[in-house]
Image (cartoon, rainbow, N blue to C red; front, side, top):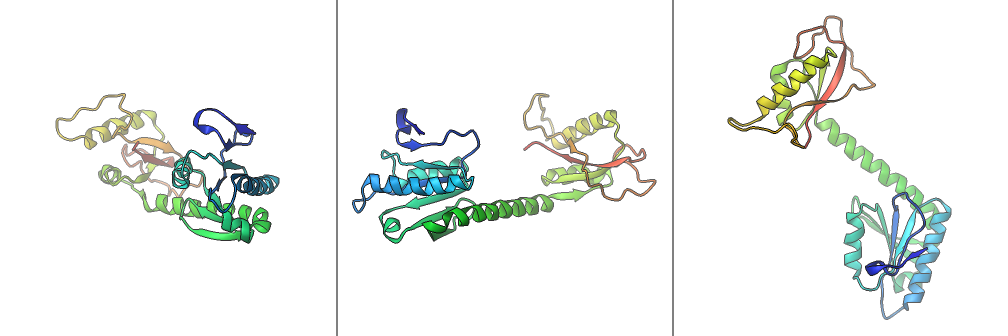
Length: 231
């Protein structure tokens, strides 16, 4: 399906709701007609759709390739495929990963097998990177004195917890007061409050020896809970 309205003229989009996984950008040149490039790109798109890869073609002629690259990177499309006259001659396509910027030239006849594997690799790499970043900022605290300093370092804070809503409200108030500069006042409706809030009770609970106390109330802890701030 080709959506034709305003400056989207020439943008070929499949009738899908799910986000685009691959954007195909024909590179206009005197060495190949627009029709040749579009037909070549459409063949690639058709092959990818057959293996459940959501692909679109950006064949708009009123934007430069560089503008299109930036446009789709901002939209978060993980993989770009560039096709030009040289690719047509060599029966290849250039693949560019959004997460690393890595480029490779691949035969078009194997793209339907190569791209799904590459998408799995991108997903795995992003997950590993995100998990490492999270773990680097995850700290375990067992007493109040260490709690706010950990928040100040933009950490996720895991604490033993009594599961008392009254004390949860107190933690919110106390951490807000501790996080504000002298004389500073924060509105209750502030979207990025310095106050701590409970994020979740992790499914995988660390050991909680009998007699462990809640980090703030001193009551018997019933679980570990994760705290953080909005940034």
